[in-house]
Each structure stands twice: as C-alpha cells, then as structure tokens.
Image 1 (cartoon, rainbow, N blue to C red):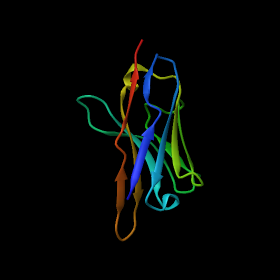
Image 2: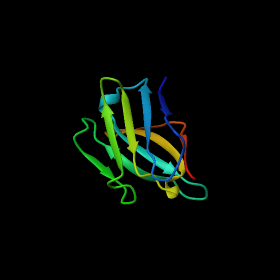
Image 3: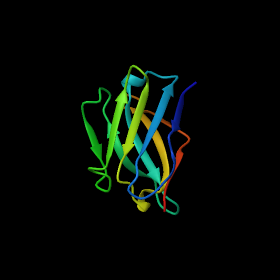
Image 4: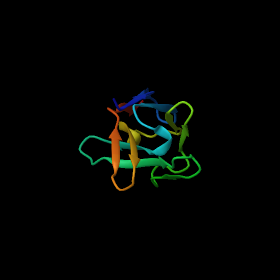
Length: 119
C-alpha cells in the first residue's frame, strides 16, 4: 500500500520557520522524483520545490527561492521542506508528491499538511 504521510505543519508567525517531512512507503522511494506543492484557498495547486531521485538537483518556485530548501534521505524514505522567513502568503495546504516517468508514469500524493503564517 502506497503512503505519503506529511507532518510538521502548523501555525507560525511571519519570519518564522517550519520543517515539513514526508515519509514514504509502499514503493521504491529512491526511484521517484519528489516534490512539494501547495494550495491556498481559492487558488490552484502550485509547485513549490522539487528534487531529483539522487538529491543532486533541485528547483524552486520563484516565490520561495532563497527561503525554502528541499532535501531527501533515501535511506529513510523521507523528503523534507525547510521553510524559513515565512510570509503570510505562504499560508496553504502543502502536499508531498512522488513521480516516476517511464513507459508508464506513476504518481502519488500525500494527504496534505496545513501551514498557516499569521501574527
């Protein structure tokens, strides 16, 4: 059974930090590129950050560059999102996403974790 379980969300003041974790099970984690998406109320889901299977390459949405860092630990089947200098506009549900592209594309989503940035 495939599972992506996010944790680490919560309420934080502007300028604060949070670290999201996504624990994967039920598939070969090291074969999947991992990413974090977010969806704010009344907005479409958007890509926040992505990391390759080995962790040697990452990319970020312009809105989070320099503030967020994505990383992965293939030994622990976990992907992380370190979020610093948080802003109210970062408020959203954050989703973990796994994808493997080949002759067939395999894609999995987590259930999401709420991040609220407010004073």
